[in-house]
Length: 140
Ligand SMILES: [Cu+2]
Image (cartoon, rainbow, N blue to C red; front, side, top):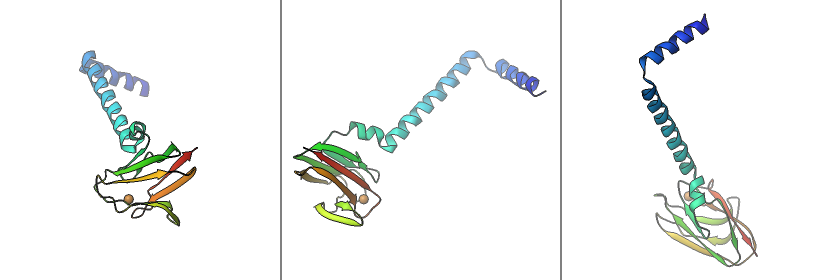
């Protein structure tokens, strides 16, 4: 019977390994799983968005972090490129650029700043990588 076979196997496992050894393996597995989950969060930018202070947008791993920033009128946003590849910020969308703000080509660690004196939502993208999109919402 299947169940009997299973219980025999479990018995063999129980005999083969001491409870403390099993606990160590389970703990190590949980540790690895937790580490991987944390790494995944970091990699996807969630943690990075959380720790990025307002007024600063970092360009990192082909993305703008945070992808949506909400700031008060008069705030200066500084973009900083942490990628080893150059990026270039342009306001609007790839099919409809409005040139409210345009950066030069930003190499690694280069910065670009723009002060938002108008209320509204300002979309922007990266010229060499149009899939990189983000927006700044300016409130009164
Ligand atoms: Cu880019």
